[in-house]
Amino acid sequence: MYLYFINHKTKLKIMGLFSFIKNAGAKVFGIGKTTEEEAAEDAAKAAELGKMKALKLVNAVEALGFSVTDLDITVDGDLATIYGQAENQATRERTVLVVGNTEGIASVDDRMTTAVQEPEAQFHTVVSGDTLGKIAKTYYGNAMKYPEIFEANKPMLAHPDKIYVGQVLRIPALD
Image (tube, helix red, strand yellow):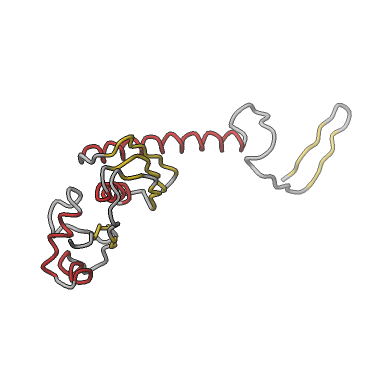
């Protein structure tokens, strides 16, 4: 391949192949965007996507009838942050579970408060082979206490046999 340098008086023939970074440098042709412009555009798209996800999460929590005053959720990548005041600890924990057990959310930053202070529940991540009975046996020493776990996770759980690997469940203390 030959590269030519042309000026007004001479024509030089330069031999060799020169490599350049394709998407860097001046936008001589007036097309495309600089790396900074693309980064800003990507950041704006990510922020808009985060707002849409947050709105859907708020709608999901409200659709379940949870009583959370001033509920606000923000999403940044796979991190959801929840704000508001839950009427009690169970509602607070259920809200965290609804958000956290949503595809695309890897972690939840719980910034909520509760109107009434109560002991916190434990949490269990479902693994292959788990059943509510097996989980109840582990936490309560009695497999027949599985309805306690089922009730503590309603309405996220529609049936005691419908749990899935990776799902996080609320395990309340027994009264």
